Length: 103
Image: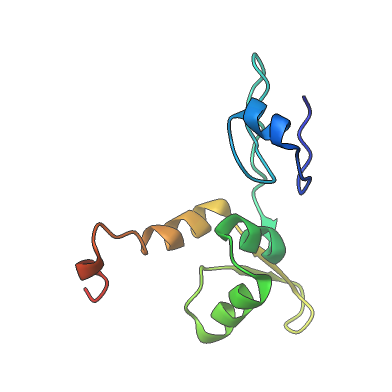
């Protein structure tokens, strides 16, 4: 089975993959897992973090979001992220209990 990003699957396909959702990057049996691209767009990063692109844009403005690259001129430059930066940012928000939030 060839998986296509952003494609909705039927319930049977989801059961067959053993994973719920609209995208699964699990390789076919006997095949190597696909490599991640080095840089991803802001929309892809928002999808990866399960945030809205506008939320990620607001986080860029106030400095609370993950680190990013701005390629091109200042106003019309392309915003890019790496999976490593997204994972590092996300790891800062991992908690074991609700009493850790204020720490």
